[in-house]
Image 1 (cartoon, helix red, strand yellow):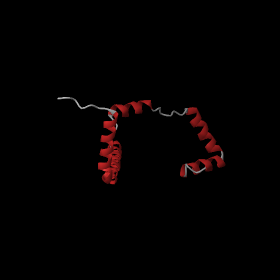
Image 2 (cartoon, rainbow, N blue to C red):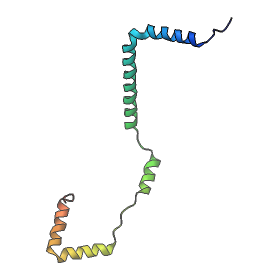
Image 3 (cartoon, rainbow, N blue to C red):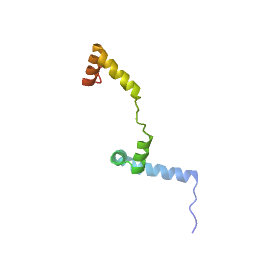
Image 4 (cartoon, rainbow, N blue to C red):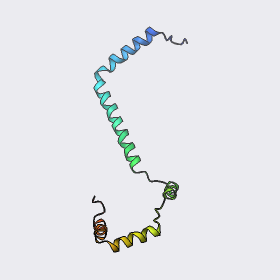
Length: 102
């Protein structure tokens, strides 16, 4: 048994023959490839959307978050300003009722 020789001309002619045989089915092949690609993308989106964080990642993020601290002297100063000034008291009341109003 001799191995078939692989030269450029034989590969080229066999490729041309193959392309001519599948040309009538090119639209179907294209639609199958695009549908498969969309299916894969939807599958990955669903898999990534349903993923839950691990307990280690949650605990590390909780430890990394810093709790804001307010100096007690600043709190006392703000309370004294609120008690002494009517306009500041109105400003505090307005900020409490609608904190996102500017």
